[in-house]
Structures are given as C-alpha cells and as structure tokens.
Length: 143
Image (cartoon, rainbow, N blue to C red; front, side, top):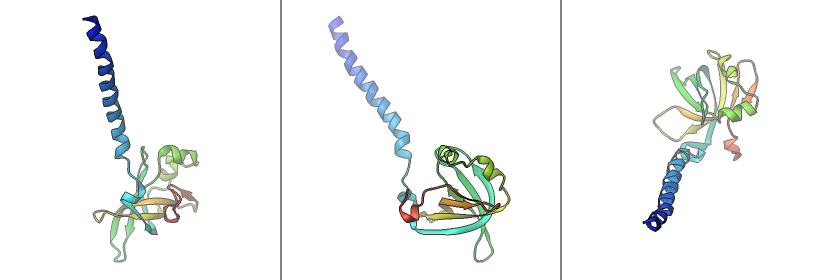
C-alpha cells in the first residue's frame, strides 16, 4: 500500500504544476502587442482638454475631449506605458492631475478598431509647455 501512495505523488505533483502553469500563463496571454490594436502608419498630433487619468497597471490611460473638423467634441482614450515606466522616467500622476481641464497635445498612433476613439500615446505636450514621453516611438519602429 505504501508503495502505491509513493507512485501517486509524482503524478499529483505533475498535475498540480501543470495547472499552476496554465493559470499563471493566462494573464500573460491577455497582454497584447502594439500591432494588434494600433496602426504605426497612422500617427498624428491631437489637441484637446485633458478630462481623466486612470493611473493603473498594466497601462496608464488618459482621456481628452477633442474637437473634430465639424467642431464636434469627441472623447478620446489614450493608452500609455506602465506606471512603473512612467515613474522611472520622472513622470508622476500629479503631472496629469495638474493639467486636468487644460489643453494638451498628444502624439499618438490610432487604433485599428472602427468602434472607438482610441490611440497609443507616444508623447504629451502639457499645458506648461513640457513634452513628456508616455509611450514608445512606435511610428519609427522603436518600441
């Protein structure tokens, strides 16, 4: 009987390890690459009023109200890099908070989805005139 129990332990260990690996891989597979969601050939400057910032991992998101050619206001969502990357670059949440309600200019690459006004941000020119890098230089292949 004891011999049988010992043979079952490696099998249980292998099953447990395999399932653990599957659960840990799930969040990693949910992460996307730039080219799946955004178009590096469609980058432009967008100017609007900063309305909101979501300072969370895995990516920071911020929102602008942008006027289109017909003077209609549309809310745009911009994806930036992670909180840790921004902090290492010297950018704090307060930089966004201090510019809330102010006009900023974002250099960004448009999303491929026709359903929404979203883009991957590269830089933001804040109301005080500083330009900060909040994403990779996708349009020049540096990500």
